Length: 425
Image (cartoon, rainbow, N blue to C red; front, side):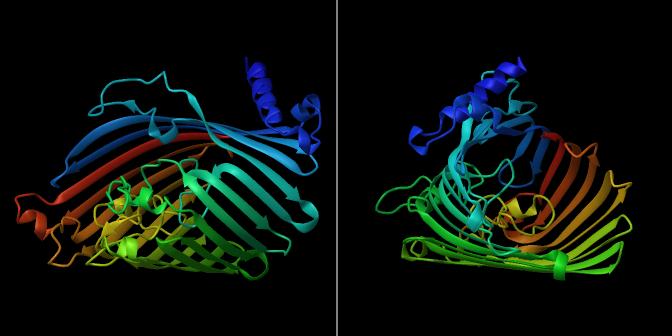
């Protein structure tokens, strides 16, 4: 059975090439197909109490991806990725979410693009449906995809230069302001649709001299005509105290400016500042950091999807009401810390703590996201092998809000428990 599937996918990848490219024969193409994939099971329990919105649910979440890269000759490659549970359509219900086990969900074509590698110049060109892979988006297997053109150059050692254009994106529910309607000359169902009604153009410069000098850095710029200009800077330094002990410092700044279309709808430019210091050695790791972002009188966003690819505090607090990185009303400040110990490079046991709050101007109608907030997280990770990992966490968030208590609501409490097994090849 597996042999038939392999041949079918290889044939699909090879037949996706163009005859005008002087591609090699189908038989030779099949011999030059590499496969990658991931299979993940998650069990999530989610409960909120005291807030205006109550939730109590349990979900079984299956996700599977199978990718193929076909080398069709002359530097050209055809890449395809099939995905099960595209846009979370195949979550199996548990308590509070129905009792349906969804066996009728198909695989979808998540990525399909043509890549050309000019190895003599250290340059790759990719065109088609593919992962966005920016600092403003989630770059895991749950991340966003779109119709994208990219040029990446790595001709200089330790330096990566990239330019990209995004024409459209998928309907990921973690996109910027996904549930906020935005009206204008044309009515958009969400802030995400309003922004991506225009193309996103961007460039990045990434340096990695970690082995030579312990230094890494990133510089990103993005532009959406008539909507927003985005910019981001990341810098880190790692000092090897001895063979087993390292100290590191990382700082990030993400900012954006909005144009009249968004400003007139009280969506203003945002800024995020984060700094974190880390100590690792003898099986122990510890981190202490600070982050600040948002405005008390306007909705702002700092990333375009989920929590982006940046330093984050805790597990869920930066997706919480008033504190979401991808769109919320409120000025946020948090101090965060984490500590863990790894046994025999296999099992890590750790904990996170986040404390801070959100301020919202008193003249705003909805101040439900304001108040003091804290999150406590417990984690366990078991690296059974390089390909198979078991993990789990417990997250508990509390919010003390005068706005809600004055309206008869108890303090908000959110609990999330996740158990996960993931296999990659």
